[in-house]
Amino acid sequence: MSHIVLGIESSCDDTSAAVIRDGYLLSNVIASQQVHKDFGGVVPELASRAHEQNIVPVVSQALEKAGVQAEDLEAIAFTRGPGLLGSLLVGTSFAKAFGLALGKPIVMVNHLQGHILANFIRQYDKPVREPAFPYLCLLVSGGNSQIVKVSSPLEYEILGQTIDDAVGEAFDKCSKMMGLGYPGGPVIDRLAKLGDPERFRFAKPHIPGLDYSFSGVKTSLLYFVRDEMAKDPDFMEKNKEDICASFQKTLIDILMDKLIKAARQTGIREITIGGGVSANSGLRERIESEGRKRHWNTYLPEFKFTTDNAAMIAIAGYFRYLAGERTPLDVAPVSRMADF
Ligand code: KG4
Image (cartoon, rainbow, N blue to C red; front, side):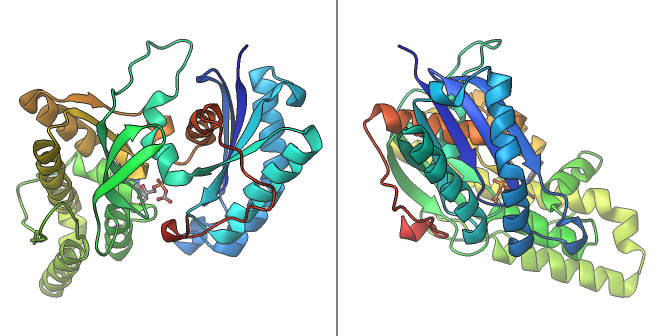
């Protein structure tokens, strides 16, 4: 018998629903919210309201595209957290009501575990290539920077994580400060391709073990740009490609140093990346080149599965469902990882 699972994601500013059958993706619908553009960041209250408007049409479309009736679903997976509480509440409440109405079980998913399992989303028109357990996942997003050891779809160990800013935050804050726009990652990525990554040097942290720190490099860039602009007001405009290339290279160096260390310490050579920053073209190239050098098997999720999407929630929920997990209807969303 085939297992059909609906996934629902609403942790930040994307409302998404996806349907998978036996691990294969049938549909993945994402409604991105435009209301935040003028504010230079996500406005939580506006995000919740947009989720409320989007959730019913997004789920209907996902079912329709998949050619699946609601009654055919075997389970409903949803993001319980971490994320914005008001946004999570919309997806969680919808999942509960839908499950109750259909008489189908609901299964909660940790958003980060969705990112970690994104390489297991199978597509009918693509060859299957999945990491073997245990593997290491470099999880890099707007809220997290972690190295996670994944021993099975349900077993995780965080080997290292940021002690201050996330790497995505460093991209976003620096981009905003340099007047390049929001979100910063894609803008810096685009400009970095045109610049010289060796032109400028920024401070690198010295943190013991496998933990990260990104606040120092952020401050180093901010002071550098401020000082140069005081001498020449056009400095930024004239040099933005080189600044972005050098800054991005510094972030990638920091990420890679600890990932290489983690691979060496654990002896694990199956390496994946996940989260919004895993869309970064410089990071993707670097993982592949280091991988060739170090005999790693590297797995990079497709771009559409790097940012928030319900396909990864559906696949994580599918594994949990198969393992017998069912979530009671009195579940409440949680905003922080620590509350899981
Ligand atoms: O996982 P994600 O979609 O959401 C949250 O963390 O909530 O990650 C968003 C982050 C943002 O910081 C964004 O700037 C970053 O991912 N990002 C990128 C790129 N695309 C998105 N960072 C670097 N290069 C990119 N191409």
